Amino acid sequence: MNFHLPLPLWTRDRRLFLLVGVAHVYLGGGHIIGLFGPHATGMELWTDIWKGIGAWLGAYYFLALAGRPIEPPK
Image 1: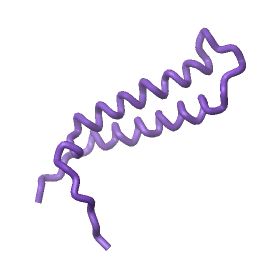
Image 2: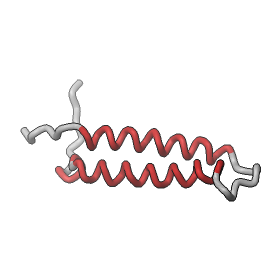
Image 3: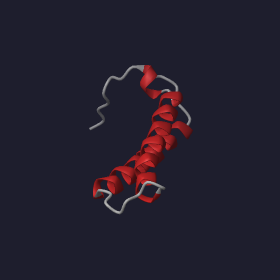
Image 4: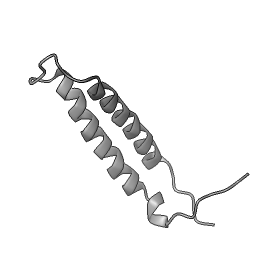
């Protein structure tokens, strides 16, 4: 089955992927710095670990999409 959702062209723009990837790096960094940064109290939540790592994995995904060449519309 070869089904594709009809998405507008701007959703495949590399600048959008780059913007979302940078936002993931920023948000993930906030969680990771909260664990090891100067304000770490030892009482950090386990959610900071998985949110930070998950955001960085999302950043990897979106930055990888931003680095791909765009297929011409058919």
